[in-house]
Image (cartoon, rainbow, N blue to C red):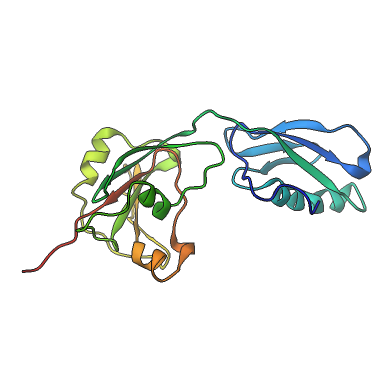
Length: 210
């Protein structure tokens, strides 16, 4: 199991070969569903998206050893990588090259990484109040909603990691405040949220006092 792939993260639509050495059966093919899960024989659904074959194998190993095997050597190999795009994320505001970014299977892109891909922030960006707007239940942000974000209301920070605006009962989006300085300059990478399909990043302009 130590030699299993530990560099490529699994994504939706990927196919893998799966076997347990002690079971002595031929490998079977499994795939990552749209929910990011994989249906493992005897065990059921396990989350696979964003994990390497090695990580997944070591997570599954104790589940088999709990009920079915004294020792389970789990072998998982990546057979086929899906090339179908998962969807888009949107970047706007004070970035050098905003627009649409395509998320591909296996991508694990954070807010700071997406901004860097967009050429970085502009000279007048407020790097401490970047807004990540996310639809509830993963529904993409509409164009109309994206335009509303350009002039967001004042929000208060309620979390050490990144703050969330409390949604109204009929509000379909949740907004997070992300501090890029804290992430890139202070090294708090755990405060850099991973993006999902339909997310919108807005980098506001900082206020300049004369």
